[in-house]
Image 1 (cartoon, rainbow, N blue to C red):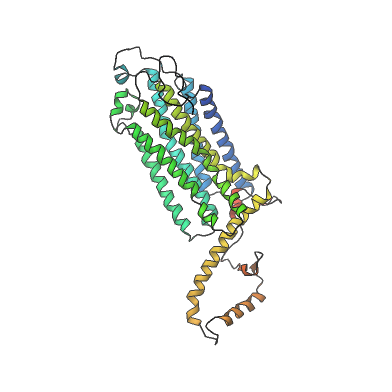
Image 2: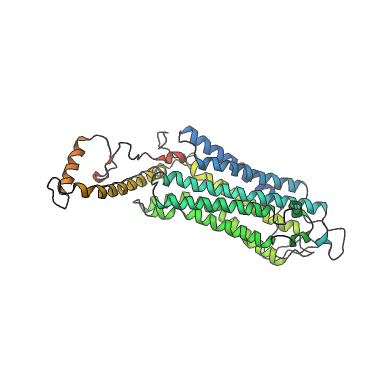
Length: 399
């Protein structure tokens, strides 16, 4: 953001932003989808190589990658046709209301590009949000299937699906049932939904849902019995999704400014729309990249400490879930057999009997603490499924 931007000759800007150049648009439209495709490929390679299995989070990221690539291609076509990142060509008709009731071929094509970008970016955001949610569920819900986190993520998924469907169809039919009105003369904007209100609702709700999803696992991690350093490490990797927040904030602020400036005759409409679409592309591209980084982190880091931290995360969650379950089971079984062997009400005899069983049962997992012995008769598995995320031990084996 800078001082009021210099507008092309004959036009006003009306915002505190500099219009994005053709080079910036081409870079965002080409580089971000390419990096997204590369990281998705590494994600699947990691799952297959370490035999960690493909989950819903992996399959959901594929349509997101395809759509983000489509956004990039659409922008590049717009640049090639001389409308995106190009100054709006004056209407040959210089009458006062020409811009309201007429549209040139260049303006019509620009509106088609805008329509495509806005329609397809909604499902792109939706698939990315869902992929991140199911990535969390891969780590946390498998370890604690009866936890509140399970319910919260289910509800969040439903909200995201509803958000995606609602805004997808609102963008298509915002001018009414006749879709071509979306790229018709400006007077058509008076039909149907107010475009400024719709965009504000889309941008703000997109940011809020992103913020909610990024913060979802933090309370669960904070409550774990881990060192502060390890907690911050886990949170830091999971918060990589926040890297797209800046683009979302910039787009929200710019949208408010461009609406307040109004689409007067002297406003460079093409450049204003280019800037909105540019930041939408940046947010989508960065979100796609961020959604894949935790899953492919091991390709870029040999930090054994970080890998072991993630490896122990689900083990701790499984252990805590097992203890809670056994505690509840113990309560339900204690009354029918209480004092059956003449023990006192403090349960000391029962504790001794259980201790004798421990001495003769070899099927136990030891976590490094005598109080953390866990029977392995299929009731609980402490082997971490964090291998699903591509983190592995120094021996090359998934952990």
